[in-house]
Structure formats: C-alpha cells, structure tokens
Length: 157
Image 1 (cartoon, rainbow, N blue to C red):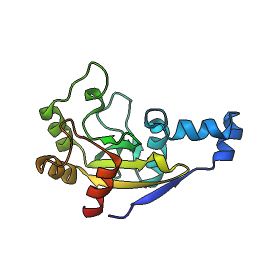
Image 2: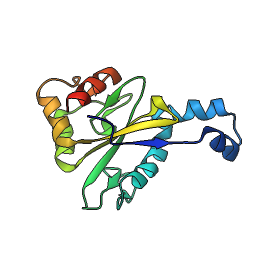
Image 3: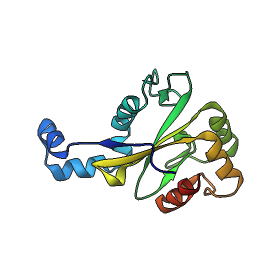
C-alpha cells in the first residue's frame, strides 16, 4: 500500500518561530513521544471533517467525519506498537483482551513515519488489517513491530 499522503514541515520556519536551532527541530520532530501531539493536529487537516478527541484521556485521538475513532501512531527508529498507550512503558503490561477491545472500538490508525521528517508519509491502516496481522502472528507479542516489519506488512496490505 502506498502512503495515503504526506505531512510536510518547514524546518527553518519552525526553528525561527520557536527560536531554537534547526538541529533541535530535527531531533524533536523525529521523537514519536514528543511530536505525537503535533501530528494529531496535522492529522485533522489530513482527514477532512475530522476533529480531535475531546480530551487526552479519551481512548482515541481523532473522530472522523462519520463519527469513527482513530488512533494516531508514530513509526520511529524503534518501530511501532498498536496496543493502547496505557500498555506501553515502565511498569505497564500488555493485555491481549484490552488490545482486541481497542481494535473493536476504533476504525484504525493514522500512522506517520516520523523518521522521514520533514516530509513524512502517513498511512490510514484499518483496525481490521491490524487485527488480521495479530491473528496471523505477524505482530510482536505486545503488538510492537520494527519499522522494517511495518513496511513489509503495509506493502502487502
């Protein structure tokens, strides 16, 4: 599957606006944890008629024009995970039932390859595709895969 679209940024304009070096812009915008909030806002622009979730505590990031829920995920050097954010990080654990419930409650994922900043491809990946990958054993045991694995899977999707 080819990218659905591209998010493009002007590094110099961002550096000037934030009054930081362009190198810092590059570092910040390729860190999925840091840039995710900005990607969510650009995703709204990329999905006409969509809007942000009412709060950061919502179980999704975007609402599309048909009322469907979407998660925004960053593909980084470390890969990507599809389970709920509350299952990722120190002291947290993966729960298959919670992961599958998440897939039942969302339309899919807005996946952005932040490693390609400032011209980042994105894909709209349906939750059905991710669920199929899970049941076929193509995702890691906590739903995390490398970026190369993502590219291999999305090519066949």
